Image (tube, rainbow, N blue to C red; front, top):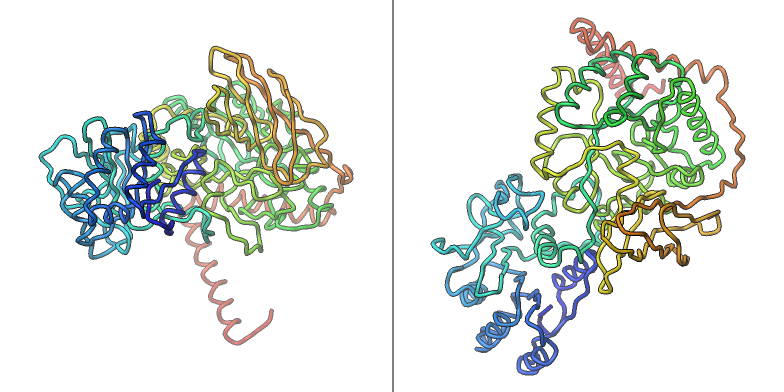
Length: 600
């Protein structure tokens, strides 16, 4: 990294991104140009250098007349350069014109945010999962565009704003120079209100990561493959539930090679249709189950009482076990929280029960004001809660959100309800087609299989592998033709409750614990998949305290009413209009009572 005599905000933020991707860097200050250039000549002997350069430093070199020497050095020694921190001013215009031999003339300001980013459909090896997408709005306070000369094949726009280049690759001899017309790089340690809206930082993050992933490839943290799963919440396993018909869904899944996981409510354990159970048993490559709460009541997992949480999770597990005993249909030990509500202690108790992971639409615990860092939201799973993985899922609203997920190695977890099929199954097929445009190699698998395989890895200089582990257990593959050593790390807060660490298909060489991380070194034979598992002790009573009869009756009444709504009311225009009118009446009455301060 080349910069001025002090690191500015953009330098610091780019260094954080470099470290987040698992790379190492060296900072060189250009305040004494001759000294810096001599140092570069001494330190950089090989002709395979990547340089990221603050345009302010280049502008200073241009002003002092030294940019020619810098160009000569880097165009001969470097294979790749990234120029950042560009603003619409005269000095920047002169600098980029000099670097591009006049092909880039200037940077200019955009009048409004009402514009869109358009990512090139070519150069997919750089733009990756974003190729061909177009979305907005932009951020005109920091996003600009280039005035360019287009009649040169060596000047390729990668991202444009309204047909004007924003992110460009320029080739000079053997060196590829990347310019991004932006003067802000996001601080990935910044905390955000809504982790699902990472796309708001597209221009301040993605071009920089595109460049680094393109240059360094498997030396960056990356995932073995991109996986996807379609989830449907709540339905019973009946021939039809609301607008969902399992056999019609299966027909579409066979057509597109898709897998659907049903978020199954444990209290319905004894109400499954045997014909549908056989369908699940016959087609495990298409259907699977996970655990959806316990009784599916509001905030049932939003509490902090550990003993009560222990009872609820024990009850949910027992009922899922009984459902498997009755029907033969297995389930994944993955918890989906009803209405997205959970607490930090819920995550801790799921870990004690040796659940593999939680999957949720919400990233922050109920009644918790803590916000998450952007960096935490870019990981495959959020590990902030007792070191237990929380995988985020999305409703299919914006395709660019799924591009963000796949770009950072996160599984694509898509959630809907039976009403998604109200107009038939074409919308489902269109969704699958849209997801496939991001990456044709996306594999659709069961939820349990996906979370087990959601780890990041990168190559070490010695030929071995570093691994970031999230779910427990994790399936790690040695795809090479020789035995390799894997250096595995996982966030961990409860070292004293670890009962056993074991690996099937490999050999543990050593394990080590520190304050918030556990490190495991394991050897895995060539072309072998190993399963690493950490077993925890549950110090709470395994006694299952069932709900009182009156509570059970209320819960079952709620479930039956929900099913009447889904199977009859929502499918009838007449009944739906009556229900809607009644709802409006209740809302109006509530507003009146609030106006006159009536308490009940």
